[in-house]
Length: 142
Image 1 (cartoon, helix red, strand yellow):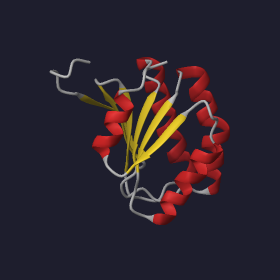
Image 2 (cartoon, one colour):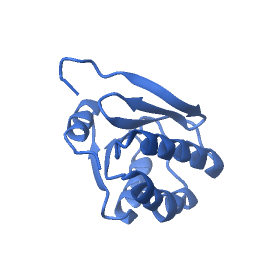
Image 3 (cartoon, helix red, strand yellow):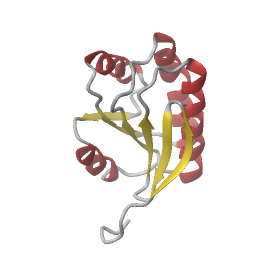
C-alpha cells in the first residue's frame, strides 16, 4: 500500500467478543470487547477471522487486547491445538502483533497462548498500537 493512501477499515464481523476488521494496509484486526466470553462466542469470533484471512490472503493479525478478559484454559487449548494450526494451513497465518491489555492476569493468559503456539507463527507484543502496526505492515504476506 502506498504511504500516501490512508488505511481503510472494513468491519467484517461483530459479536460479544468484539469486531473482526480488515485493513486495506493488508491485515486483519481483532478488536476485543471487555466482557467475559463463553467458548462458543470465542470460537465464532475466531472462525470469522479465519474466513477473512482466507479471503484476503494477508496472513497477518493485529490483536488489540485493551480490556479483554483473560482466556479460559479451554479457550487457550483450543487456540493453540486447533485454530492456530488450521489458520496456518488454510490461510497462511504467519504474523501476529499483539497490543497488550492492562490486566496482568490477561497478559499471563496471552503468554500461555504465545508460548504454546506453533513456532511457524511469529508473535510480537507491543504496549502501543502504532508500534504494532508499524511492525505488522513491514512483514510479508504468505
